[in-house]
Length: 255
Length: 381
View 1 (spheres, helix red, strand yellow):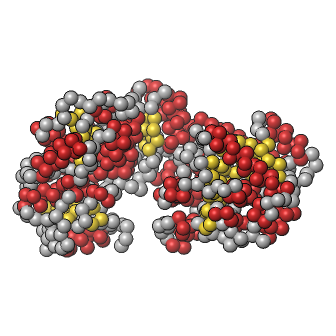
View 2: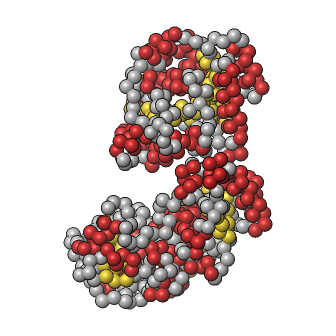
View 3: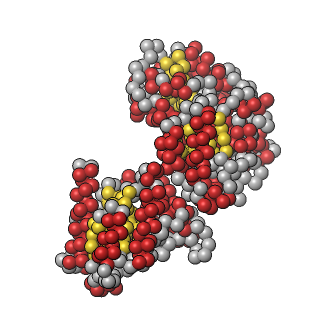
């Protein structure tokens, strides 16, 4: 099972990258689960035609009980991708990090992975690892690899460095390791050089170079990923290539 | 009122189960919680506290440590203490505050083991479950770690006792009586998990022909030993006059066939509410119900307030999730056998027979706890 966590600065395009990757894995015939771990709960909306799934925290708030079945807190989107959102507490109250851990515990109780037997699990995580809850997706048993999404913008690279440092700090704990950088271009001056400098300084490969594309926005307006909307576009092929790369590596590790 | 104990007591929590199960095994148990909580975990729930030493510690978690995620302090304190005390293993477990802070005990254990070289495991207690859950996880972790190697079966018939702690059996001789009964039934006792056996005894558990599960907290380990060594298990406690012979036969049969058996749940079905009701841990109460059925000729129902695998309950048994459910079931029973702290929710016209359970009332009624092992029951039913 390929288990990936996608991190990056807020607004950098994590959900776009994650859901396009999910769609790409699905187009390659894989059984995929995407779990959005952001209180905004908008990670999977473009896999669902713009019709969102009820986040787990909302379910708990509205029903005052745990769900009996994964079906109550999930929806099946493009290519059969099972979409789940942790959601978050009432804004300004509660604890969003604890919400992620509670959701993961609940999914374990519901035996999600044993029953669904996915080939790929994607965790789309809030921009910064601000507390234990936001590191939960990279704990042992969850994601084994991290993709960091960044552009060449200064603050995006700053956040990427923070995420990389946080993951490195956990290396004695058996947590996930950083697989590489997804360069999500914003077309800032010297973008590739800046991202490459960061990647080289930390010994990380750039595993995908996603061009700035109006096609992404066009399809998102229709509630779709670009991989769903038109897999023949160059930008779609970049996501498909990344999915193939990661799957090939996984099959080499676990033939 | 749902999910509350307004009048009666509550059962000891999972952290107490961990401490109780690991008390005698030479390991170091660290409960990650605020200072002062040692009494809760050990003194009130641990009758051995005054008689024998054990390395049970509380981390003295502070508000700042919890907020700041200061795991390093916990890890370095444990490694330092372990270097001084040289425990056979280290178990780190949680309480409500680490639960809310999302502390990752598996990761902490990994770091401690890497630095100390001592086998370490994280246990996922939270104070939100009963002692059975903590005791079960603790025993499974120890057995998983220290019973790893294949061992030949003993030449003579032999058995392990799984799930024995003072929380279910106190320290008044019941576990000794189970040992004596097993020996008399022709089974040498390889280990008793976890009273009056060493970690080395437990390390030889794979050599036994059969496992006797005396409490729900031994069931997961029984399944682990079955998966690892093919050892069958039998669930039951040899209480009363006639049930011990039934249980002994089940053990012999299981040792011969390799099949599991649950004589504690193999009871006459009664569709009626108006039968004697026994409230308590599933295996002990089921065994007692079977003993009453055999010795007094009266079918009984178990009212189970604790976590229990469905297999351990007979079709006529009921789960009582809270005080209201207990009171409702007591009101319909012919009589009730339960810990004295249940008495206030038992109607005055329902006969109430006192059977203290250390995990429910602590040391309050210890002196009146009867030893029911392999002898006539003390009540006329």
